[in-house]
Image (cartoon, rainbow, N blue to C red; front, side, top):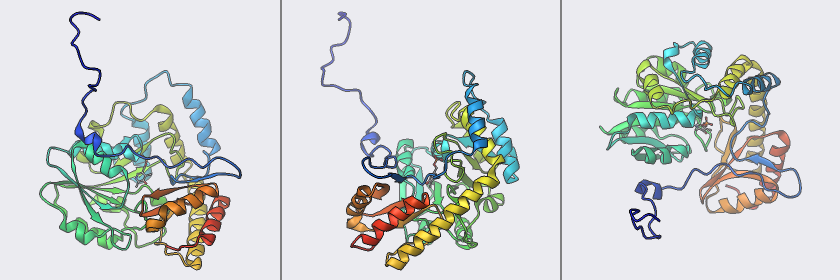
Length: 366
Ligand SMILES: *Cc1c(COP(=O)(O)O)cnc(C)c1O
């Protein structure tokens, strides 16, 4: 050791921001349990279908070009999204999944003292990404498993910089009705951004549901977050997008990590838009399974909020760990939330049947 090296006691470790001690790292959906019998992963709301042959071919082709950096401006994908949704390319920003865009927006608004408002329970990324960005989370409890927009409006302060509305809500599956959302948006100050997180929009069949793309057009402080992870089946590739007015999209582009959307993901996303009709037929199958699963659960006596997403929610309370263990024993990985409840993704019919068997024999009904 050189004589000039500072003498540091071995017990001293690098110093990190105290915020890191306040939250647990993101918990990815559980892998299916190993052992006998087919195991199913119903813990992350993924598509049960593998990539379409047309998309798989584009992925293989794009793989041959990975010695080059991707297009940071994502021009081709941005144009494809803009054309598909009938918006100007300047209204589009991309990110590493919509989680990436959530982080980009938080980075863009979080000056010291900034507050971020969202319903709870909702998507788990909101709390920890808000903490990391240095914003203060203000959480408004769900009412009847849905957003309590009256209470959320009352929780807005002069410091509220960003509001997340997750519809359908993860993990409860409930939607925000259009009329209610419009009334809420009318009460939000123009300098406060509202992000409508529509990760599951393709699974919505309720005609009363709000459509973010309609609402954002007249409202410069409203942005829509969408993802290729769920209905389009590209969770492993990490690409999502935002549609919002010029200033919002520009802010999201500035806070994006350089080259964050890789070239394979961009090619696959463009191919998925081209194959959308085929992908949406798969979504129809999942929706039919969702209705079957919820109908069966109701028939058994379970309480299940009406889901417009590709999962169902059981508010099991203190029975949650026991129920999750019963699923685990049957070869099903589901997503349980402490002593609160469990979210079960809609998978292939055999997986759903397996889940219904567990639900039918489980002694306690939510
Ligand atoms: C799954 C999910 C996302 C998106 O995840 P990405 O894979 O990062 O696009 C965003 N919001 C909600 C509510 C989700 O459930």
